[in-house]
Length: 219
Image (cartoon, rainbow, N blue to C red; front, side, top):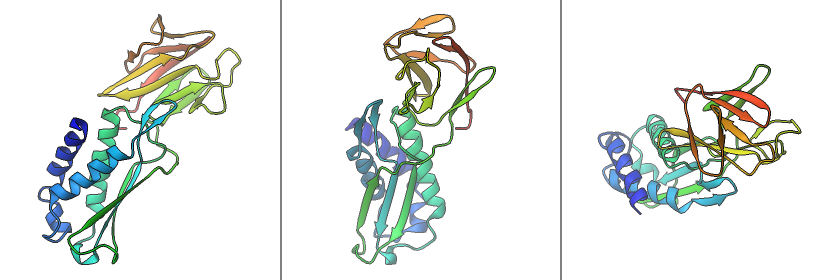
């Protein structure tokens, strides 16, 4: 509940002074923030790589409660929600998006929120770069390995099907080895089942393949 309340407060601060230009006075910023935060929490589920949540949210309001084009507010809410999921180390299956739509089925002064998991291509937030290959890391909690199910696929026999897991949380990137046959090294040290923080420019060795870890600073 503390995590939900933390997101709710962040959204309230964002909405203060903005919601009044988009919505009529019947919809209070705290109500909007609370509904969106609760839906993000309710939508959490366990993925094979760890905790995950929905990536697309639709806020339905009565058309009479929409006083202006919500595009700018949608973008701000999307960015804040994405920051929250990244800080919490949550996986998203597709691009994060918050939409605000008018619906006659919603009573004036009311708010309905729908959360969905919509798979799609996610912009890279980091890359694994070797002498002859560059691999993009888009999903948070990305499975790295040789298998078809891997988010970051390395088609080498020395690499295990499920070799390692990479994710970001609280402003840092982490890696764990998933019991691979030929191991994982980070800056010359073996990586085990305990998370190890990675720095921009770190050297990652998966089996016998070496990569430079490069984070997209604006991602």
